Image 1 (cartoon, rainbow, N blue to C red):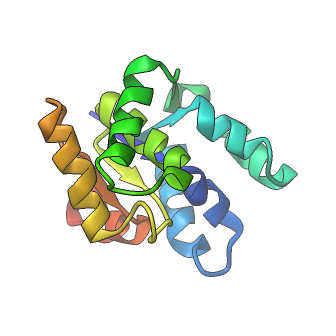
Image 2: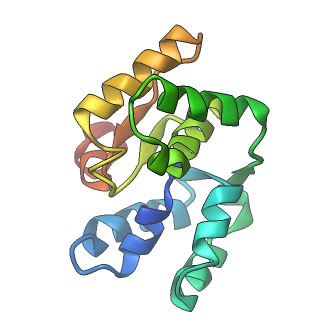
Length: 155
């Protein structure tokens, strides 16, 4: 069974970023090979379509059978807002919280991000998962593409 990974927008943008492109392209190779199923949200689409044309084209080249969109609903908003009310992050990081809530509720195997301040941050990951457990959700494994690619089971 293919792994379900939630890609936040930073990973898609990382494809063309000098610092992140090598590891990001490894992820995209796995997506194109059909070994990874990506999950994304309406928010991801909104962020992508505000970006450069090459990012939009990259995303649109992903075969539709390898990607699943999740509609943002009241449950997702409530979970995202709980991350904020529990002070995992501040209100200015609400979009980041929505990404995490979508990944959690869609039961993604991983959330991949290059955002080390608000998402791939040990203290924040602990906070997101504490809220998830408190509300009856599963923990979500939040990691960078480097960590994902270095994990033996993902090679």
